[in-house]
Image (cartoon, rainbow, N blue to C red; front, side):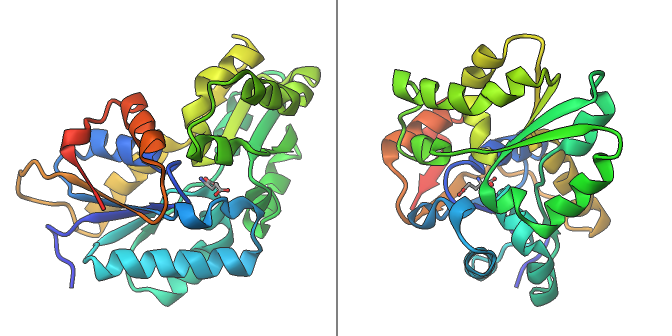
Length: 264
Ligand code: DGL
């Protein structure tokens, strides 16, 4: 059973959702956080809808077994394919993450935006529905990220080969002169600098980490689940395969101190 002092549970197919965890930790420093990285099954983006649903159910069950009071799906692929099933199946509040195409559309002056996301996200019914509404006023150029999640999981994004691979995938955005690029996968936050370097300073990059943390904050209030006591608790990270070097690299990028974290 969970109560006010129970943890917030967060999951992703791997390390990507730690970009969301760090935003939640900044906005809710008092809350205990439990993170599950399902790296053994990454990437989710190439799986079928049913496989993504099944893995999302398993991850949610794991976090509920660890007494979590709310679940943050820190994965666009899992949110867009499975959040409706999770909400039906489990009696617990969920917060999801989706590509921020709406704010990008509103802010775009050229009315041409790009979205880089997984195949699973871009082919989901939820993304299709949301994008269709916006496409009446803005051109949305969609690109499926290839090999990026794997490179982040394997800690090899600082190589020439990786940057060449990335450049090839971003070329169509440059050709189409977009002014906003939406990062539609939580892993991609960790290569924001690589992307900025390729896209140049005229293209603004948007990801959803801050908005997801803000929404989590709001839901805790609405459901009266905000923690009342003030303890500085360690963050628990559970993983079934993650490379420790990649994890350390990501924590360093996020300015999270490894001494404040238990890794299981
Ligand atoms: N980080 C995930 C997302 O936001 C999924 C990446 C993957 O496993 O393909 O979509």
